Image (cartoon, rainbow, N blue to C red; front, side, top):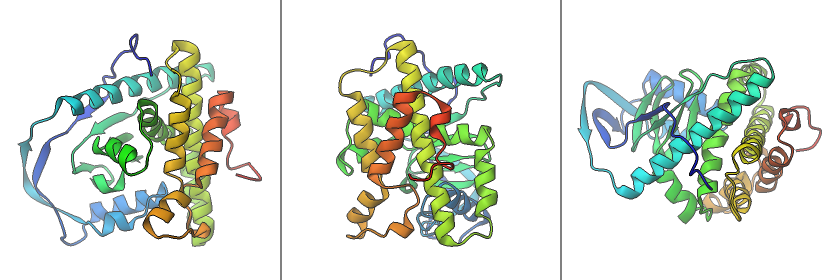
Length: 285
């Protein structure tokens, strides 16, 4: 990706290296952890990842600043550039529709951090908290994306951030609230299906961002699209389940298959239109 003419976002909250005494694993489950588990379910994350590593918060919290590597600082700069570009793109799209885009904040953290949804864990991967309108990212996930999931490259990393921004867009448009209401009282199977449609829409929205950003600022380089497609495939439910369980259980999908995630990302990328991302009205995903 080419961000030589890009700017860095002012909406980055850097908490990297700030260990906190009083945040520890293995204790009783507090209300903040329960809230975050519910948010995890809301966006299709396995809530067990939260509940199995429940955090206890015991005041006072003491900041423990840890050193940062130059490589990590470069990743943080890249994340800031991507976030700034999503701000420009979604600002233009919302303005064209007569609306004002409210940019989210990106919180960079190490290991664990507090959010308005509770205590977030690096093990959860990147997540969006609708209660505070912030994206949370432990930069070590980019290493996992490359080494564990086989999806290297800067555009693969940008796709991850743009996907979480997609959830923010869903929140602003009221889609997230409607999905949450529909999931109340629904069976686990129906709830999972709604989650899949929501995740695939966020994939499509990340493609819409890439389309507009490239047309306006020519940021994509040769091989970038392939990197994004590999990243979408790497985090497909079928691929993840084969890695962790050794078998695929379609009814338990919460994000969509690798093929579905690639298809919807490509649909947004090729069309550049919000209307193309109507996963909830699609007869087939």
